[in-house]
Image (cartoon, rainbow, N blue to C red; front, top):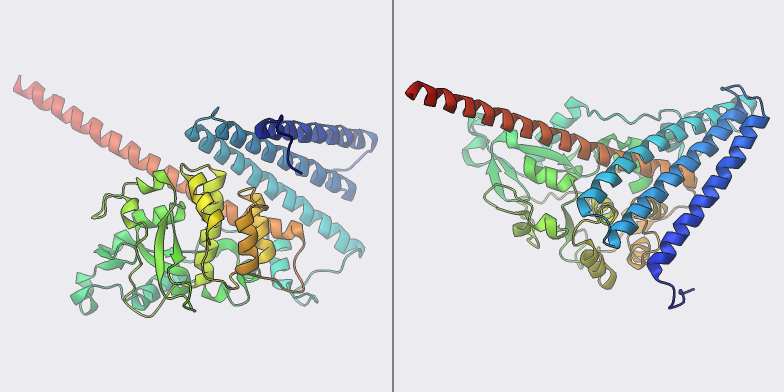
Length: 426
């Protein structure tokens, strides 16, 4: 139902946030009474249930705080840099709270398994998604480390699949330079990475659930990788650009173009033969062989990147989203991602589940099956995927800070040398 013209939309949004905060506060009061009225051992089933309820309220409150920040930014009360910093801090807290919440849910499952309320979950369980359930409930940790052997093999195979070596390097390894697929230029091997499109440490079973059976077997293959200069890989992982199908009439997708997202991304300096990322916008990716990365993996990267652009209010995001609203964001229909996972990601990352073009994508580019995991389980998969992206951003920031510190130290050393030289001259 549309709002009356006398009520500004933004004022109504703030009122809705205040109403939800009041509801959370009332729920907390009820929860405190339950805790005070009942003598609970820390490890009891009832205590675990109450902790799940409490952590759920914590997470909901953090999400409201984040929504209020976005409203302040959209109203012009908050600078973009302040929004990004505060949002990333809140995201860390939301992810951490979600981790604690899931651990308590695992404890509750153990209680129910031990008491016979639910069937014991084992590799022989009668479920279409046993592997995904085991990964979620019995092996909850998501390692941030990749297998060096698998990564080495992926790099080797990607070099071969994309024919990335230059000239005489094919015959003499000492002369090796490797080609960056995005920039169509050759660089020293240390500067070229086999970049993962979908994070491999999501877990094989969870990737199969979200992206379709068999997807996990391709995670450490050139299907899920592209050779990129380290600066290009950083921009790709940070969501400054995506790859989109160029010719919607061709299946499977053979031609891809680069789409740079947002005004700041356009001006992002590379310091290569290509000065800014905007110089690549709209250009077709040139492949030297018949191999192409898997379209479902590039689709997943596109979706997560698009939602995060909105979440962090990247300059120019409104224009970008408006273009997608009036056009076709992903022009080639297909079964790339589970429909319920797309909607879960849209709700959790960009608060965009009801956006018209998200619904169009859910119709044209997703798949569904008769069975699926519960909403809580799908939300946990989405949380882990988001956490991986956030951790990568944090690591990149730390690396950049270290590089800046090293540069400052070098400048100080040079200043000291200059002072000594001037002192000697005097």
